[in-house]
Length: 239
Image 1: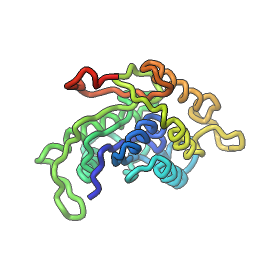
Image 2: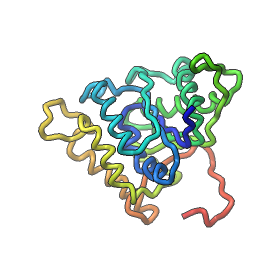
Image 3: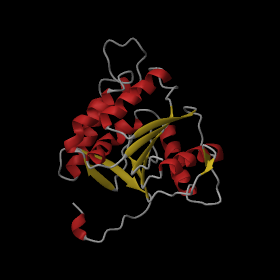
Image 4: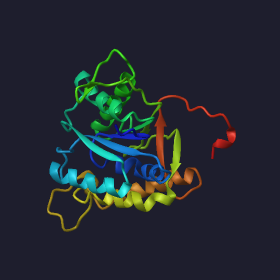
């Protein structure tokens, strides 16, 4: 079994890269094991193909130094936060036993992001219920509940509960996003334009990171919201 310190759950390939790849890179640099589970192949997206996006996700995983990355194969746009999908995600949570889960924004422009956030939240709680039985390779899985679930902020502005300094890992974030070349601005592309393929989109991502960084007096930051209060033992732990 590969136990992860942090599991990132993303509705689409590239959600994690756009929303929290700087934080991922920072935690990997500290020696933590981080993995990503993409819920869908993003097959309803305007550009690219499921096969291409899988390859792009694998390339991004290598750039970020992930311990693992897998795709649940849920139906893009049509997946639900229901028992069927919850049980499948519970299996993954119990397989990797993460201490921390990073999940989609609780609400966003794309409805799948909010659905993914809700699904992750519910599955993380339910994964700790011993009377919910799941199996892996014919072996009954032990119950496991992550200690924390945090939600990365995506397209729509949400007031963050905390901000991670990603200044030293900004270039890694940029490279991981660039791995999804099918999705972003390319003057040579003949595919239809999309919301994220406009030439203004990636500069917006940098502007958001600069804004969050400015709030904590660093160059670049990524914002997160919490599901419960964060407790500390020492006021000097805060920056």
